[in-house]
Length: 527
View 1 (cartoon, helix red, strand yellow):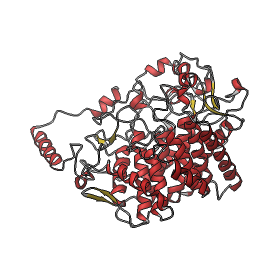
View 2 (cartoon, one colour):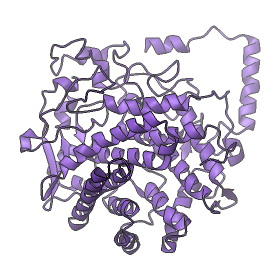
View 3 (spheres, helix red, strand yellow):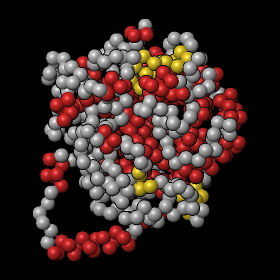
View 4 (tube, helix red, strand yellow):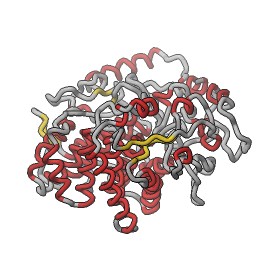
């Protein structure tokens, strides 16, 4: 906290300074930047000089982050060298091999539901915007996808069950220790016919189907394995319907961390939609058409994340209608339009998405950057689909085209990278000023390389309470971010603001890749 306070201190302002501030405030109010209901025309003005960002550098770092989240035996090419092998016997408690995968955030639990969503979004990032990635970064992005899919295949390897989690979150959260030293229970959780999990199975199907498209050209055999396994996961999801967190034992393990608050129905449609796109199988198109209404496809939502897939589903499915290939899917285009209109303050849609005074998308509940990155990804993806057609978005008195969506996404990613009232990048390692005390065990404790002796459960507490910077910068990690007032205190204990997650970074990979190829939307025609 002391470092942040020092960085924000300044000499006492002069009277002339006060006059300048009053003039600036008058300008900002005239531009209607300080109220959430600003007009669409003024919405893309910056209340401070915008910087030129190095999107390529940010992209490279956003992908590197995933190496710091790896569980299992690390490969020879591991670039986050301060990490070591961990969780190598995961699954042993159930007599299965569940080594690998990712820790979801700053703890040492492998939560399957957000991990599968992370995988879907990493794959979607490569599918839509991989052509804008430098060759090395596309290779690293594919490796990040494969680290997840290799693990997800293991969760499906035993008939009749799908493994969804490794680690007792309550015991894990009672410790502050490195993943390399874990001595808490590595409890294994699974879903089955008797305790269904259409949500985890449906999201796993989506992840594997999307990933199959990433590897189709370079490793067709692996791609086919992924697609076959995706079909298997979807069949499980559709046959044994139910939410995993409805089961008392699974609820005790997964809640309140990753309960399925939104129900499993959206994951069934989401899984079917990805299988349709990856396989071109009309069976999945018919499934969407026949079951959309009963599974809640008409539910309007301006949220998209690990729990609620509706906005992403509508954007994904609308692609076929926009391209003229599936006219019965017109309603999904209408739902996608409704989602976009909630982002336009001048539209008649309700409820509007809330913005901070500095212009950041904001939703209550913590880890807000997940909304910034996932919604920005949908805006760019939808803009890509619209730009290849004559379609626009009708928001009442306002007609919105691809350029507006691209500019809105750019405003959000530039805010994340430093164009904000704090003048701070919320990506570790990007820019001159970024959070130093993130809520992350491995980052905040001495690395196993520098401190090879084991550190027990409570031995890390002094490091958690320390006001010092984390000794191992988790380069590329994006923290939960500032609150509704744009303030960020750089407090390790405030996990809602200071904890990074894989599902914040996964859609950001696609967003940054787009801006590597299109740094100035509206000034070029490449999409």
